Amino acid sequence: MFTKFPQISTLYEKVFLRNLRKCVADPVLREKLTPKDPIGCKRVLLSNDYYPALTRDNVHVETEDISRVTASGIDTVDGTTHQVDAIILGTGFTATDFLAPMRISGRGGKSLNDEWRAGAEAYLGITVSGFPNMFMLYGPNTNLGHNSIILMLESQMRYVLEAVKKLHDNSLRWIDVRDAAQGNFNDEIHKRVSATIWDRECSSWYKTAAGKNTNNWPGFTFTYNALTRSVNLDDYDTTQLVS
Image 1 (tube, helix red, strand yellow):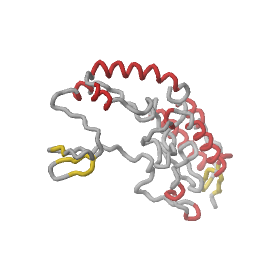
Image 2: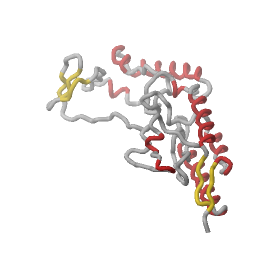
Image 3: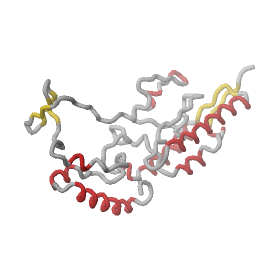
Image 4: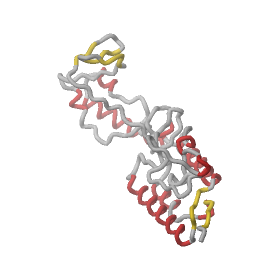
């Protein structure tokens, strides 16, 4: 549904709306709780048993924008002051800032922060051209919205271990993924991402501020497993150890 057949989402949306009507009788509150984005475009909640709590007499769901926080409460843009005892700031996280606050330098003094300024990219989500012998786990475009990330991490760890073994067995000082290999891989990734639910017109932590999806893998986990099954040194520039 997320990657190949988005039309299936219509069925799930009908089930969701039926359940919401069952749990929330107030049409105004129900409208506030109805997502405006297609299912899967943002992170999917796997629990919906919190709806009854929102219908209690001592609970109020406020969706107006906040204008300011005062010593005693919160003012919203409609001019209402909400008296509160405590505020929990739960605004999510910036998953597209892969490096903050780290600084990593590569060949010729290039900075990985500069290389990723327009959005992080990596070959197989593991190596970056110009940064020899740098291997990542859970790198760009290896996040999942439909399966366990453990499967991706296991594939990456196997790949990295084989790369280290090839360094040793071939008496290599370093390997550095070629720019063409990385570019071709990322062109294909973003072509496929553009057809998924994650690239629809909604804001999410999957995307940069410019709208580039740097987080999600646009296919099946077994496809990624196959792509990382072995290290092809033809994809890399190499330098021998000097004896």
